[in-house]
Image (cartoon, rainbow, N blue to C red; front, side):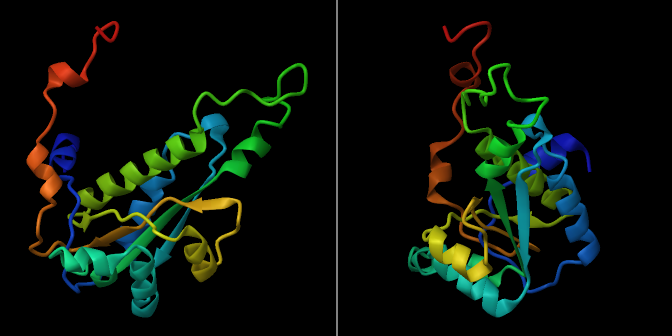
Length: 197
């Protein structure tokens, strides 16, 4: 599939069939996620892949799936045959930036202008979403309402942050988000050449 078509077709899908996803497709999606940029090549992202139906239901509960259903959406988190939970480790970045090639002359760590562990995590998420479309599949995204319970459920170390849940599957008819009524901001409001003005 052409890259421009992948971008055009990418959208958040909120319903899936029960058709399974091949392990080969999942491996290609995860391989793409691992190719994302990473400050200092820290590679501080991990991915939890869940296929077990009971575990998917437990994850869906921690994402507030019942609230989505009350709003008229399908139970898209628990229904998806696969969930990927992207995680990032701030500690991995601090550790990396104390290594000899990254530490400053005075022995201090750099000042972080933005938390690049989240930036890199977001890049990995987008690569997953695009790789899913490239496999002729669909994906959504759900926030986690109780991070500590998610850590406990999936045995995620305390220094690792789960960023959200990506349900993946074959698309089924779904109710589009009402947020889409906002439309895209005009290019002239979004793109600033040379400076903000």
